[in-house]
Image 1 (cartoon, rainbow, N blue to C red):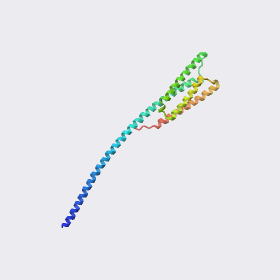
Image 2: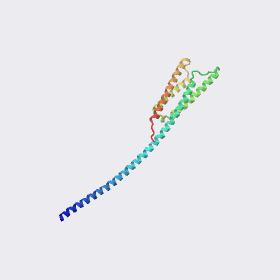
Image 3: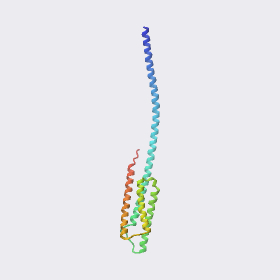
Image 4: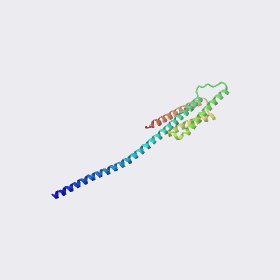
Length: 194
């Protein structure tokens, strides 16, 4: 009977040691799991903070870019209005030559002011425009420079000048439409997620 007692005691000790090892393994696994969970939780919080910061920065950048495009649109509209006013097909021309010259000088001055205002805005905000918008805006500047050069050094009048103005108007309108389309594309491509 003693041999059976020894075998039973050995089995009991083995069962107890197995149970103790399992319990100790579980304690260690829990500790390791908690440490890993804490590290992962910390990493997750850092990622959330970075994401919130990036969303805020992106939102501020988009709002500023939108303001810049709004300003550009207003400046281009003022320029376009001055250009079309200067080059009206049917405008009242005073009979008195001095009065006609005075009226033309006033229209030219309004055009110059609108041009410089537009050009300064385009150059001032150059870093904030999408490249396609800036390239198109340069096209409007070229049209304006052509008109300013004609005002300083007129080379044609009558029908040839009329045809030239009509072509410039078409080019100006097409460029303005292209700028508006590029701005729309840019604004619609931006998504701010809250």
